[in-house]
Length: 426
Image 1 (tube, rainbow, N blue to C red):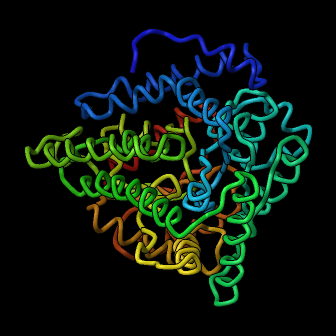
Image 2: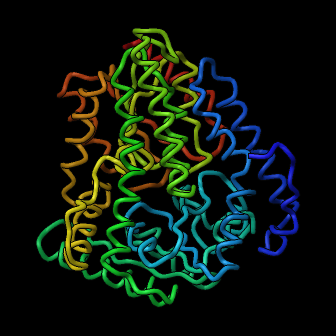
């Protein structure tokens, strides 16, 4: 972690980025990060690692990907946690999340897709069309998934300008759906072997399962610490850890997050928190918050509350379940991976009672005083599920606030007023 600045512009230029626009993006993200994160008081010292990661998010990590590719390695880019990282790592590839979470090049995006497309889709297409995402430029293959109609059709457009392959995710969880998904995971394994030139073995897949599970275990430890009052870490910092988990080197990230979890255990034992004991505790549920989308967490915590959990893909859905590690054959391990991933409760499934159960369980386990149900504008899946979530949360005796937003900062004032009124009601 050298303090000496490195000029990454030659590397970015080689990747085909629009350098002036990319510089402007990094400046804006740096400002957002500073305002949301570096103004916090009494942060755990272990967050210094994630501060460093953010300072090098398009630098050192991209250099690692670039070196890996130049040594013959293959990089797989993904937008969704339904793509099994274990399969890619077992084939010798690296898996990274791709850029979304901010508005960019929407004028270009709206020339090829409707304006009323959800913010996540418009964002990832904007980052690609605007040539400002070094992760997608580093990806030898982008793996999409049919989690919604918008993404499904967007991947067709993306496939015209980038090497893209799409997994068919069933929308129900019947026996035939499980069989379909197991077949899709096996197709992914073949695709990974084809691209990397490596053969997945029992040993390589077992090691990959353990490695990715260890990452999840570290995040589970961080999440578990937030059952304490006062909470030893802010919701923003915990969210950042999960966001970075999609990008960072797996063994290094796991090591640093376990060190952070050790520190959080010490803070809990000492009664040390980031907010006063008795501060209002909020569970956030809904659409994923792709980096650098920290807006809602920032609003909640600057209003004096603490976000103690996220029932979302950049939260508990990412790490709450492990892949069984007792498989002895490739078929057993592949089936276990497929079953674990299909058990994730995304709003694309019908019925989706499992998500409602998760929200109520997490709210009770974390001692939440209220729930905020977040949907991205024009995300039909989560907007449609809001009624069921609201009804179940109220029946469980908890207040709930429904929030629909996008990646702009134009509604910050309005959202702040609504959140503050909600917290006062609690």
